[in-house]
Amino acid sequence: MLFPATANKIVVAQNGKVSSIKAAIELANPGDTILVKYGRYSEGNIRITKPVVLLGEGKPIVDGEHKTEVFTVEAERVTIEGFQIANTGVSSMKDLAGIGSLQSHYLVVRNNDFIGTFFGVHLSGSNNVVVEKNTFKASLRSDHETGNGIHLWQCVNASIRNNTIQGHRDGIYFEFVTHSIISGNTSEQNNRYGLHFMFSHDDEYRDNIFRNNGAGVAVMYTKNVTMINNIFDRNWGPSAYGLLLKDIRDSHVEGNRFEQNTIAIYLEGTSRTEFKRNRFIGNGWAVKLQASCDDNTFTENNFESNTFDLATNGTMVLNKINRNYWDKYQGYDLNKDGIGDVPFRPVNMYAMVVERIPTAVLLWRSFLVFLLDRAEKAFPAVTPASLKDEYPSMMPYDFS
Image (cartoon, rainbow, N blue to C red; front, side, top):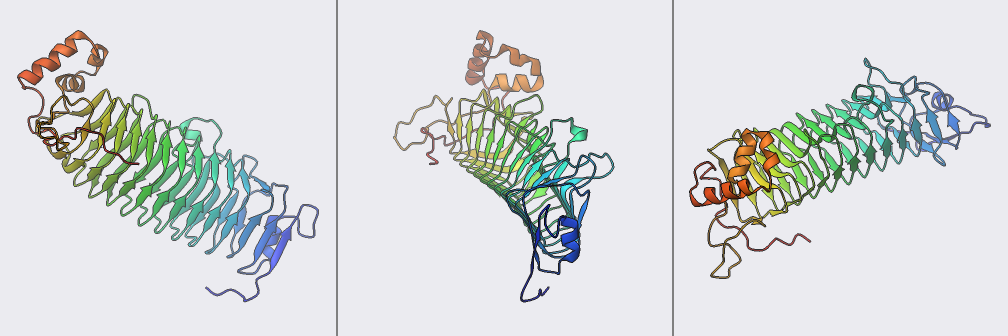
């Protein structure tokens, strides 16, 4: 799409010649810039039907007054930057958002503050979009009254980076989104998931912080996902995970830090996925590996101060676990090569008992549990014989 060589600038000011954003959009030609001066603009639903650049000066407030979607983008190559976008309506029938779009390719949403919105940004069928350097803070409501901070459906080549999301249902939600990247975001204190993937292949998320969310992070029914250098922190609760992987295959999880989660990683139906150079610190369960998982590898990870390093619900384990550091390892290294001379079995008898009888966790640190584990080490009978680290590292890996 070609724009005129000399794009115009239209200035919107509450006491100026053009006093409303809607009026400015009517006056604009494709490629024009609309500069909105500071003030509060309550204009109902603002439809952007032309490729324009919409810039706020001093963070003007665009208020939906709890009634409508604030901006609805219906054109390609639109930029919305520098606004406070506040108080959308709440609906059980419509996904009202601070910024909503349908098939609005090359949309840029940058440096905005979303305050009290139902959905923050809701994009459908929109490719090559950028959502960056925004803050999202929803009002404290129940799940059915709160939408997602950044919600993408059926998009390609999206870039979601350096945003802060708080108080929504899911911080970031992807469904049928491919070849996209999520990087540098902080998603915390959301009602459900900090990040939620569904049927979204060939994506990458790296350098994000997912902290203190109701259920942690979930990646489901997806292949070819790369998860690198993220922090999964303090996702506590009876149904909370640092990272839930369900029906995932051919993916890569490296360089992440899992600290103080109820379950750091829960795997179900996961295949051909590599877990490498991750740190598991102070979690209830570091890894719960269900019997439905196969051909996954765990290499060069550090397991430190977890209640349970590894748990499983089956006796046949078709996964490889080698060269990890386990702070519970009590073996020796006579040849001083840094590798333990005897294998380490990370699943203890007590972990198997708790997997079958969850209330048995009340016996943790009791003398009975001590006796059970010592007996199992002497005469292995319950723990999976094939689930062992043949070459445990004597020292933690340095990931600095």
